[in-house]
Image 1: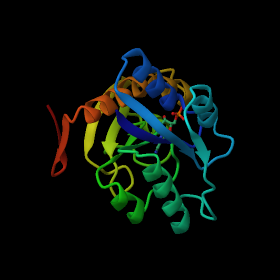
Image 2: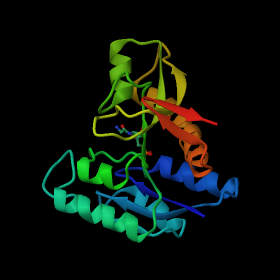
Image 3: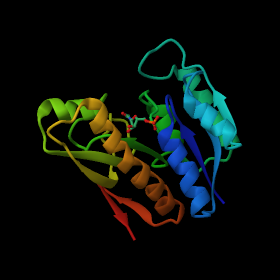
Image 4: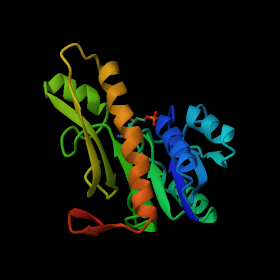
Length: 202
Ligand code: GAR
C-alpha cells in the first residue's frame, strides 16, 4: 500500500475526488491522514464519512503560513501516519523550508490555473480579469516558491464569454478532479521523476 496524506483548508472536493478514484479503481493507495488548519473545513467531514483519520491542527498566529512550531506538528503527524506523499488539496497556507525539506519532492499541489500564469490566490478570477481565452489547472511538485515547482500534469479549460468567477472555477474544478487523482496514481506507481525543471512520466 502506498500511503498519502492530504492537507485541506476548505470544501474538500479534490479530497473527495481522490477518495472516490482510489475506491473506484481499487488502487493500492490509502489516505493515512487528512489534516486541516480550519476546524470547520468540510474536508474533515468528508474524511470522517469515508472512515479516514482526520485532524485539525491549529495553524498559529499567522494568516498565510504555519507557525514554525506548528509546521513541526504537521510533519510529525504525517510521519506518524507513514505518509509517503503529501497532497495539498486547497490548503491555503504556504509551506516553509522545514516542511518542504522534511518531504523533499514528496509534496504535490493542485493549482487552478495553467502555471506559470496566475500564481497565488483566486487564480480563476485572475484569469478572467486578464481576459485569457484559455486557462485550466496544474498539478505540480511543491518547492519553496509559491506555485513554482516542476509541473506534473495540466488540463486546459476554455474561458466562455458569459463566465463569472464562479462558473469558471466550477469548470476548472471538474478538470482538477480528473488530473489530481491521476497524478497521485502515477506517482504511487513510481512512474514520475524530476529532471531539473522537467517532470518525466514513464
Ligand atoms: C481548488 O480549486 C484548488 O485548485 C485551489 O483551491 C480549491 C480547493 O477546492 N487551490 C488553490 O488556489 C491553491 N493556491 P476544494 O477544497 O473543493 O478541493
